[in-house]
Image (cartoon, rainbow, N blue to C red; front, side, top):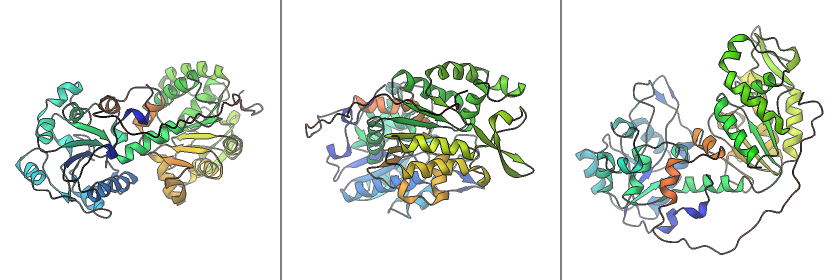
Length: 429
């Protein structure tokens, strides 16, 4: 599925002054010992809330935290306190009850509240069509007390939950400011060639879906693999030997990797870092023993990848290059991010662990919005988008256009360039 920003209604298409706006945000956060940690999503969604307040809207934010039965399944009381560092917002520990309805009805222009964790509603995460979700008590109740629905959370657009797909079926709806920025960055991310993907992380099947799609669609000139996915390609190429346990675990992924390698555009690490008596030690992939775990890419791989990145027109990075929670094995991720920052390429950086490393590096310039790049708030939704899959949360908004948007009528077309073929010596074999 190809999504274009012009297919969606935006916040600027609505007159929200004096109107009650249901705003779906994603403040789902890491929880350590019961404490909710501040993350970039909270900071950026606060910007949308503040802008809507300045426009005179009455803002009712809805969000989730964790999953039922999990340790991180909490109320949103802490999230409200974190949001209040950046925006004036109240907290209502209720979703559809009398307390929530009264709070919505008594809001004044420019005021904002955050309702309780929507996943505490038994209908939120049921497997239903958008039409059935639109008839749920959650949607019917909140929609009756609001004028517009705005989804500002691209990071949950891959979920067909009631608070994501139900409201657009019964209310005038649009994408929020942060989702608008995500979509604009994704649209731009395939304009300037060569297009280089840097793909790592710990979910090989999802990443392989992305690789298969972008190679088939001609959207990738080179794919630099790291992390678990890089290890799989090392093994698929026969550069290193995998033990029996991991052969069974990654059997399907190995088969897919071998087929994808026929494209000639996929690179895997030539050296890796392992742990020896608690310390980082680098070695050639050919010297990696079956029982050893590659925890990061090595210095030579960083050098090769940096050269390709520096000659790219666009770089899309999703997933860390190693076990970056351990400072010793964050070196590869740091090196790649520094290379991207130093290059002239437009960059799109995936959320999650990758953006956490930006915090470790204090790379605020890279995290800030600019003409040069964008750091996404999304994880799973971004992978699905890059794999060309449909996202339920976008599909319901894409067809929901109450009126045509005003456009400048000016179209730009990226200049055609010769296909880019990486020259990496014997890296492929």
